[in-house]
Length: 403
Image (tube, rainbow, N blue to C red; front, top):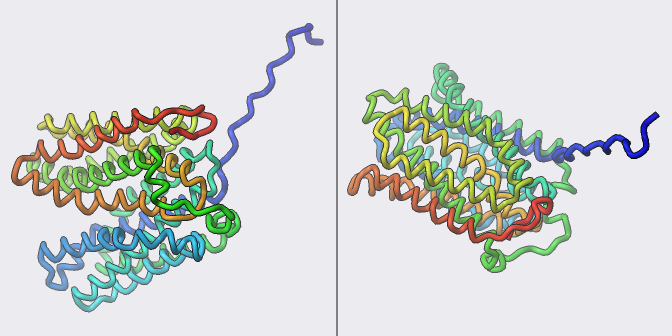
């Protein structure tokens, strides 16, 4: 018999689980990135068999991002008219067709056309998938949902290159066939498992948010600025400049792979906990921490001249990037609130702008001013995003909405 006033404390309710569709979208995204990882290391070698030199290979690689950028403005309208799930499946099928045709291309010109199709399909998938995710996830789970979604992409990107190298031993066209098969499987999974009623923003009966309205919302602008900085650093500094620096130091490209693998593993370990931080602490603290840590890491790269320090700082950047994979998307979800429109597409375009412009500008700065100045260009963007994040005001973390 219990003494008066000593009753046991009520049990603490476990946090509700994420909707099933979030995990499905993560698996689909993982398949897409796994397939991209299969073909990206092989693509330059495959193009060289058609007589393509460095310039034409560079054009082939850049064309994918350029087509993503050119197609993005139409994604919002297509989602409103047909629904996100249909647009997502259409994107997967277009990418599958692109990869299959690439495997049997007969000339460099055909490679260009097929690669362009792949870029268009890629943005149809990524924009509609993110819009669907933000429509499904409750406000207090958008950080976790965004993190789980990005975790699928990250794990697929880590595993893909190694598998692509093995498949290329069979034939250079084999990774492209495997990618097409993966995408077809992802399309079937999407059609079979995703609930149309829950996963189609256009079917929710909510008003469409026009882009001019979004551009007057500080949260949306800060999220887009962070996305631009991320695209610039990931594709301009990390992917385009770091390999050149490492090879100049150590004369061995294998060390580049180790640096990227270690930092990617750190990010993979931290990304889901980062999503919880975004939901529990709030968007503003997560944005400040993410941009601040990332800016500090990239700024420090200006002053290092040793491989070990470079790897350590890439890992620090990965910790900040884990927060930036979840917090900006959650902010966009708070603003758009599941309503169909161009908001998610414009947000995605900011990353693509950084991915297209960043490598070119970083390369020019590195050649004419120096590598430290090139690293500084990314640090400046992240510092600006940090300052902008500090201007957000915070609502209660339980609401998951920051202004």
